[in-house]
Image (cartoon, rainbow, N blue to C red; front, side, top):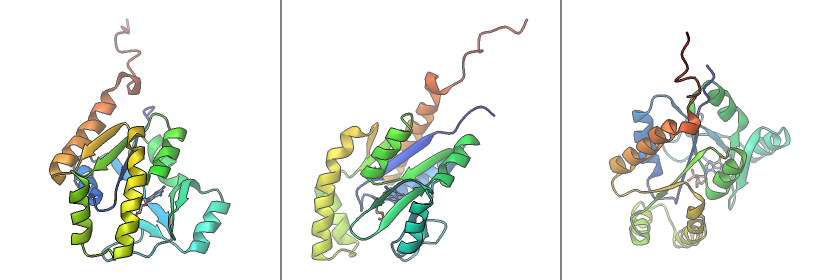
Length: 202
Ligand code: 5GP
């Protein structure tokens, strides 16, 4: 097979509902693989090692940095997050599309390394809706909410570097839009091998 897979990067503020949207996207596109990142943060309730992330210690993470195992990595307040080369290169060369969920720093880095990747930013219907969702899920202290809102203001400036922005008002509608983007990107002439389409064999 000479057709390479496509890289899709999804970003969005925490609380925007990326998880639900991505699950619906995976249900709709069978030839799509999630790039499982490594992180040094502790798993949240319901998260599984090797499914949501590879949960490793800070020391293990630093060992992988030394061994050059990451395409990109980032350190937030206290945690490392990184994309393993092995999560990307294998599937892409087998013609499988790979979806990465990254913060804006990671997305920028991947765009530099793979200019033909497709970057999508999931936005909330409004800042007030996002604030209400963050408060509603009850996981934020006053301080962490303040920190998240500062982060949102900073990350928001990066939206203009993305190829697409999709609002998550209703998860199904948002997921459908993401699926349409992926399908349309595959139809781009530059992604298809059409050279011999009109060449007769005789
Ligand atoms: P969370 O702790 O909520 O799972 O993720 C925090 C942030 O890290 C999110 O914005 C998520 O997109 C980002 N993230 C997850 N994995 C990676 C990664 O491998 N690289 C980068 N740069 N960001 C990541």
